[in-house]
Length: 444
Image (cartoon, rainbow, N blue to C red):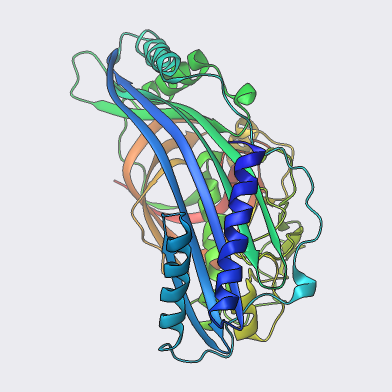
């Protein structure tokens, strides 16, 4: 991936836009991308798979007034550009008019492009990646004799360049990278049929920030060993602490409920809740799209609109929806620069690490794994299979599995007691562990 490749994509994107104008479109937008990388996986010391990934594509959306058509292709030739635009134009002539469709307003488009340091090549090739994956897995297998099997160690490296442009004169792009190392192993207590599986991984833009293969392997082993001897937890009402590795899911449900598409379809339990208290007053939920090297940073969204820090929850009150241009028009509002979703979503937190949160909880359930999709976006009802640890006296007492936790998201949000400082930065939603006042638990 290089600057010259980005320039080629910018040239291609401009050709698409020019062709759309030539074919009579009143407005158009286009995007192009190239991606490449590999994933090497080993299992029990043997190479299992080596996947090389190389992909490219371009897409165009044309507008004839309020009529819209879209087409895409992976062929970058001049003939393919003409044919793709023609296909989009043909589709537009037969689609129903949509008064809300169209490009972002020119004044909303990004005009500044800060260096966010998103693209970092990794000198590790496939051969060396196999060695790293083997060493990662071996560190897990050698950690304890009870680690008896492996689901594999994996090393991946991917880079891409994306360009977006529209007929308002916007044309820009950027390169990005994502590198990762992971390991998953199986443990068994001698003389017992109880077997448990767990994993760990590191995923970053800059390979210099990766955890070492030994750290990843040993963490995977420890997490697996901690699960041995699991039993069903107690049934009843109790405090629940969502570990940082899964706590982002709670904020994901918030984002899904305040996303413009859910709101204008009236498919959200937070319909008409703007300006209403939702969390304790010390809680704020916000995004920071311009963090350097962060997982989801970008200077513009999928509409070309400038991204900015948005506060979705301010002092406990729902203060903004998540809107792209189309959903904003449907709702009679302004875009929040969230075409393509939120970017580096975060939550205000205290100073306690996980151990401090356990002490604050006293007795209850620490959830480290969730199963199933039991969330009703219309009502906010929440019911998921779970596994984790039962906590007594502020300390982990024993592992639990085959339990169900249930509640309503509105009540869960309002019942947040503490958010930990143990923020997991690996994904787009970045939060620490979240302690809830209570949930229903079905176990024994």
